[in-house]
Structure formats: structure tokens, C-alpha cells
Length: 162
Ligand SMILES: [Zn+2]
Image (spheres, rainbow, N blue to C red):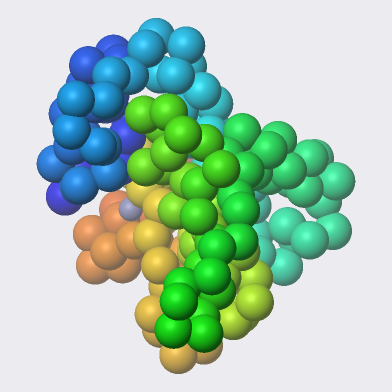
């Protein structure tokens, strides 16, 4: 498992990453300005997700970050033809493939799953994960790995302090 886009260093790498996930239309080119926009989306979304879900809605900075991110990838409503309505990217450039992230935020806020989207509490990890646990109280992406690492560390710190 690799953290989503944390290792992307260039527009070319972002293009390859999107391409592997079927998010890039053939022949579309990511410019360096687009690459910057994608990094900004990532940073703003992570800034929001790193906060405790309970705190997010009360935190003005968190809301501001999220709104900034959402603004970069506007959506339009499109009729599906079978009576359904879909949220589609308003962007028509190569970055349109990242707009579903924003649509997922919207869907998550409607069906109550947005609070389950979290960032791993482990400093080394900081991976974004979806908490499928029943009480939705998980703090680490792979508790057996990141959770143990954290527990060991706080144990050691307590030992040192004592
Ligand atoms: Zn983790």
C-alpha cells in the first residue's frame, strides 16, 4: 500500500498515477500548473481530514481549507437519462479526473460517511483511510501496525518520563 499521492514529484508522475486508476483521458497532458493545483487539493483535503471528525464542523480553518479545495474542482449536475442525477466535473481539462474526490465529499456528507474518512494518527503514516469499524472510533489505518507502533512509543515515553 502506498500513500495516495504523497510520493508524486512531477506532473508526469501525477499523470501516470491518474492513468493507472483510469482517471486520465487518453492523450491528456498535465501541465505544471495543474500539478500544483492537484497538490493544493491534496494539502487542503488532508488539512481537513487530519482533524478529529467531531472538531471539523466547528473549526473555521478546517472549513475554509475544505471550501478552498472544493472550489478548485467545481461540479455540475447532469441528468443520467434513467431518471438519475449525477455530479460531474465542471473542469474540462486533464484534472477533471480528480473531481470525483469532491463528489465523494458531497456524497459522504449526505449519507453520513464523511466522518469515517480519517487520517491515520501515526506521525510516520498519515495515510487517509475509511473507518469501517462499527463505532467509527478507529484512529489508525492498520491498527495492528500503526496502532502498535504508537502504543509502544507512548509506553517508552512514559518509561522515560518515569
Ligand atoms: Zn497508519
